[in-house]
Image 1 (tube, rainbow, N blue to C red):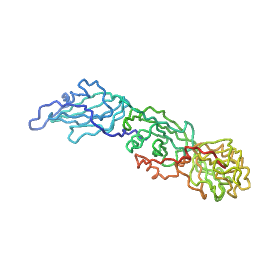
Image 2 (image 1 turned 180 degrees about the vertical axis):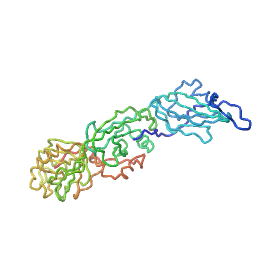
Image 3 (image 1 turned 135 degrees about the horizontal axis):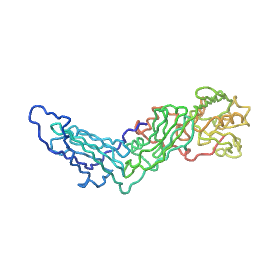
Length: 421
């Protein structure tokens, strides 16, 4: 993501007045200003909030620089930067009498403003001034926690940003998005998507590149986000990706085909969900791996003692939904692998194949189910189904590129339901 100026909303005015000193007006003919002439210091009188210039400015108010009326001069340019060298966006009036910031200043920050002016006869002037902003009373801090944990992931892993305060207003959401920077090497196009008032996901238009380095960080520290809400310090995140592993399970042919970087590396006979328990269609991101899981029918609403109930030790379990859909070893249904769908929603295979799959994939890799009678994978309610939205739909969930409307996940994601088979 680019380091563009932070977008903020203009409120009321804190005056930084540049008073232009009146000078002689040219009398007919042409006016020549040789390079050897001393420049006209039209910005010699500067007031920062108070006459002393030592008071800290209120970051709740925009910075304004004006030319003294009747002095016969104008402002030609103003450049304001913070201590890190980042530019503060501003706007100069057409007549050169007023310049003001179009984004709020950061709290507790140091700024430098370079003001260029011109007298009526064209004589130039320039002044460099510095000032500090204070910290508002009753300030609340917005902190950002990035996820997942640092490490190596598959190319489908989304970046998660959890906010310490709910953000509902679209303008505030846009300010947050612009302050959350995600960069990858190699570079790719990407965008944030709001799941609800406190959680955002970031993914690229396509999958992450193979063997990429991805960093996520917040530049919101000191930046005003909402009413008495300012960005706080947040720890950055660094991830890397491995090969592009995509496992495609065809529920109608009862086979899983595994691809590495576009090339087939294995074809595995499987069984998926039987009628009434059909496996979800769509793209799922591997959430984690568990060598051993105890799977019980009661965890998915099957009453104990009924014909569908079960209580089984399961090995080499690769999780793809929070509600308990796995790819795992199912030696009890070996005769149905490659021939029939007999599970309660998971993808079962032989112990040897499950061990191979378990060792081959990592969190962030992709499992795609096709030709099942099951429902479509929810984009956010039951794991990372982010890739089931096309790029246009994904951008619509951004406050910068779309409406930024919240998508509150159902309770299933919060409950992290126990697994089924």
